[in-house]
Length: 512
Image 1 (cartoon, rainbow, N blue to C red):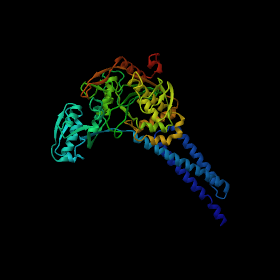
Image 2: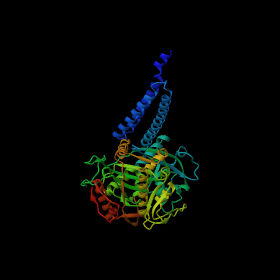
Image 3: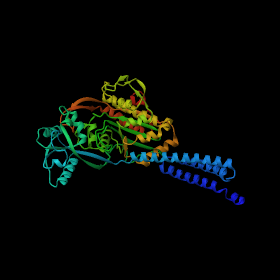
Image 4: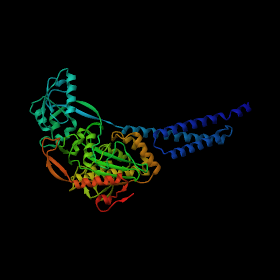
């Protein structure tokens, strides 16, 4: 019996070793599936796991060596825990990035409104009503909603057309129509106009129709431009890539993919060779033709009503560049991300107090802020003579602070909470594979990125925008600043180093 026992005392150790080996293989498979880890790192991790497995086998292969067997078992348990925890975070990372990437659809929320004192409490209760609709603005979505009502009621609904938003609202107020059909994204526009700030208190929403559409980005830059981007990121001679990405900041009323005005409009030009990011901010009130307005100028922020692709194409027309990627940020939800990071450092051009009820004070220079403070910092405009132009600069300072913190080692201490905070805050049409490739390059190359910011300028005026029924404040572009932005973008794409001093007009660039 003793001989048989000695012959079989390798079995417990073999079982432990096989389990370690199987878990190691599964872990390596999960790591490979992320597509984020450079090959050299995969090789190193694989070798380390093989060595640990070999050590564990040497310790546990004879059960009768109690001390060695116990030590090997403890080492195996510790490795089990590390692999299990690592696998958990790998899956969580993949899920988080998959959740925000490859978003190629948008939702238009079309609502039916009646007067606040109307007895109707549902769309069905408006059967037989005369519906007010816009005659030309957002007509495709309006017609879609009308067709939906035709199907729902089983008969053609009666409609009355109005030329603009205020005329449509007045038609409802004056009982010319029993209900109106309106894209929810127009509510903020309507409430901007004199006499309509209380529109939502005078009406009630009895139903909505969500119309999902694909985000179709067109090449809108001039045909003779030598610096035009293509539908894919440009591969440089050194094997890197150049991305031109539209960063849209919203504070949406509904879901993340709902069309809404964009209060932050930044073009990021990224060169992975030079590790440089150029952020160009365009004020929300910039008075420019939209890509769908047949040359009629409008406030840039209104482009978001018609879809993020209209924002991208409109900015593409302005800067003679094709913008095929977007990254949408919900600045309200962004608070969670900054808090998960443990706060960020933002640099202020001025010493100022916010003009809202929170009453935060910011010093000129560096300020370490939490999520709420960062949101106030990025939204404030009334404290500055430059108003919205300075707000755009502060928004870029917040983005820079987030990038700097995300690339620092401190991110490891709050990695799980950061991943959890991404949900509902971001959306992009950049694929998971592209994001993984960028992360892989960062892991392989390491090092810092240079972030340079620039804001175009203009002159305040009062004009009637395409999407509005009355005159409003707009910013007429200073095209000399637009031309400078084009030049800076071209230099970054071409691999030249652009410094912040050069962007500010106090220095020159040098070739990389």
